[in-house]
Length: 153
DNA sequence: GCCAACGTTGGC
DNA sequence: GCCAACGTTGGC
Image (cartoon, rainbow, N blue to C red; front, side, top):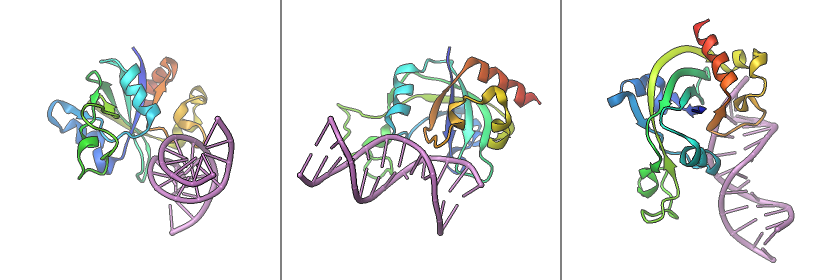
């Protein structure tokens, strides 16, 4: 069992949007970074815990709890010339971009970035590192537990 | 809108 | 394989 933080732009898919979807589940389409892809393709397991993070918005931070809900499979948007995620170098015989389904479990108190930065227990979190741009990052078990407590505070 | 940081591309 | 140029991310 592993833990992850996954960024989503709430204008695109917020925690509320995903909770409103069929099965509270969304295909995590649009990742076009190899490191992030490899986490989904090689490391994630069904049932892994996910911190649902809102980025690119007025108050960025952790907004909900989710879980990995499928094994990896190809991201369909890479094959669609009309999609902004279209990749001309990918084809169905040779998919380049893989994704997993993510099931939203519940919305939590919004924990803004500055509050996360205040936490000594989270000092080494990847998301808090200077210049971090990765949309999917692993979360340590101790970090996961600490954030669980923050959500209840 | 700005800017820092970082990934990707492509010429050599 | 190097590295400069360029594009993207994302907080502010």
